[in-house]
Structure formats: C-alpha cells, structure tokens
Image (tube, rainbow, N blue to C red; front, side):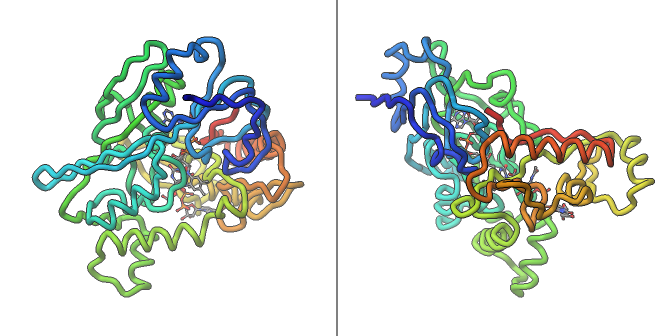
Length: 338
Ligand code: FAD
Ligand code: EPU
C-alpha cells in the first residue's frame, strides 16, 4: 500500500541541505508502487517532481505538489561474448553499481566512481567525469510514461545525449520515470586514462599497467581531494556547465587572456573550463553569508550551514554577472533550480 505523506521537509533529500517543504511525498520501491500511483489519479491532480538522490537540485522555495522519490533497487548481469550487459534499478545508488562492476571485473564505469546520486538519474544529464560519459556505456533504459502508464524502452539514439544533456532533460522533461538502466560493459578491461589527472595519479602510485580497480581508486582519490563531501558541506557538484563557444569568439578572448584553460571539441568548437573563468573573477574560496565557492574547485558552490536556496541562487547570479563582464561568456547552470 502506497504511503503518501504531507508537508514533508526536503532538507535531507537534497545534497545542498537546504530547507524546503513538499506538499506531499511518496517513495516508490518497485514497479507495482508505480502502477498503484498511476491508478490512484493523484498524478493528474498534482504537480509532481521526480527525485533521485537530490544531488543535482537546488530548492529555492517549497515544492507545491507531489515529490516522487525513486527507490527501485536490484542489479543483474548477462554476458554476451566480450560484453556484459548490466541492468540496475533506478533507485540503486550510482556508486554502489560502480563498485559492483569494478569488483566483478566489468569494465566501463570505473572513471565514473564516486559520482553521487542514483542510477535512474544518470541518463538524465548524461553524467560524466574523467574522460567518460554515461553515453559511452549506455545500452538502453526502461521508462514509465506518466501520461499513459505505458513502459517504453529508450535506446541510445532515442536519448539524444550531449554534454550534460539528454531528451529527459529537454523535450521529455518530467514526462517519464526511468525505472531501470542497462549498461554495455566489457569483460576485457579497456582502460581509459586519457584525463590528465588520472595519469598523474597513477604515476604517483607507480602503477604502469592499471586495472579497472586502480583507475577507480585513482579517480576516487582525485575527487576527494577536489570536491567537498555533501555529508559535511552541502553542495551539488559543478553548479555551472563548462561553456562551449565558437573558435572566433575563443580567439578574441584568448588575445586578452592567454592562460585561459580550454579544450578543443571534435566539431571545432571550444569548451572552456568554467572553474578557471570563475577563479579569475576572484570567487574561488570566497564566503558570502552562509554560501560561497569551494576552496579547491571554484565551479562548486557550497552551503556552509544554514544557507537558503535563494541565498545560493543569488550568489550564483553574482558569478554569472562577473564572468560575463570579464570574459563576455554567459555561464549556464548545470544544477536543476526549483
Ligand atoms: P536528482 O538530483 O534527484 O535529480 C536530477 C534530475 O534527474 C531531476 O531533473 C530529476 O527530476 C531527474 N530524475 C532523477 N531520477 C529520475 C528518474 N528515475 N527518472 C526520470 N528522471 C529522474 N555529475 C556529473 O555528471 N559528473 C560528476 O562528476 C558529478 N560530480 C558530483 C559531485 C558532487 C559532490 C555532487 C554533489 C554532485 C555531482 N554531480 C556530478 C551531479 C549529480 O551527482 C548527478 O547529476 C547525478 O546523476 C544526480 O543524481 P540524483 O539521483 O541525485 O538526481
Ligand atoms: N580550474 C581552475 N580553477 C578551479 C577549477 C578548475 O582553474 O577552481 C581549471 C583547471 O585548469 C583544471 C580545469 O579547470 O585543470 C578542469 O577542472 P576539473 O578537472 O576539476 O574539471 P571541471 O571541468 O571543473 C568537470 C565536470 C565535473 C567532473 C570533472 C572531471 C562539468 C560542469 N563538470 O569539471 O563534473 O567531475 O570535470 O571530469 O563538466 C559535476 O557535473 O557536478 C561535476 C563535478
């Protein structure tokens, strides 16, 4: 029997740790819960929000509607030739899945070690880190359409993945609940250490022929040294996306800022390191009231304790304005603002 709760605090359900109340709240542990919710008609009456681990959200006000927390678990693996197809429930903790795969020798997710949140959210913004994006290992996902109650399988092409983008964040935002994701992994380790920081960390550890376990450990080490742990300092990882600009615009900026950190893209556009732009504007380690920018990573905004969502949002606007004034580049927020 589904339990719908009312007037619930979302403070422990978002990694920024900001206070916000939901009019109502329900947790789904399996597909039967989902079907029960659909038949109950509450979805038609209320505005709703699909919630995983709340690690990519900033609540700036109370949520007037139903929060649907996704907690379906279960992991299974099938081998097919050199590949292993691993399917995980949407509510599985992402890093638990990574750990399971690394332990079993299934290669592909190790560079994505320690990303917070759930499996179900991973296709939504095509999570990525240290040279790998979810799209590189994605096979398909199963999703429940809230308008019809039907389940649809989304293949790679259906998802329209791009840097921190997918159809679930665009045209289909809020229309489907992803219930499980299948990953195409490799039984033979294909190590990807192209991201400079991994290579240096492996060198420091004197590892010449890394296993996926070595890569996972190196990534974990790098992440812990740069990023604040949300269980002690509220944050949602990178607050902004790294901006992608045309070559001509880039050359104009480069002329005035020769040390700019930038990465050429396959399509000739240039991705700028937003952390560098923000640091150059003097925000790295800055504290304003209860919020500020993390001392080791300027792209991460933090809650030093007691910050409200609007306080963090207003601070982020100061960053947007400063970066625009100094570089003529408009940062866009990666975190979902509610
Ligand atoms: P939530 O924040 O709960 O939701 C995010 C979005 O997905 C919302 O729009 C929500 O409605 C939707 N959603 C959630 N579950 C489902 C579902 N089952 N079906 C449909 N829609 C759903 N991200 C990276 O890409 N790379 C990183 O390296 C990275 N590092 C981070 C480090 C830290 C310290 C933190 C706090 C965050 C970091 N993030 C990173 C961001 C975050 O971890 C990811 O975006 C993650 O996928 C969010 O998962 P979640 O379950 O918390 O999603
Ligand atoms: N930099 C600075 N100052 C800073 C931060 C970064 O100058 O304060 C420069 C440095 O030159 C550094 C470069 O920016 O070498 C890149 O920094 P980093 O390796 O930390 O990566 P990032 O581009 O800042 C992105 C993702 C992260 C992901 C890392 C590792 C985005 C928006 N962020 O950050 O994802 O973990 O790469 O791959 O693409 C997230 O999405 O929440 C997230 C943490």
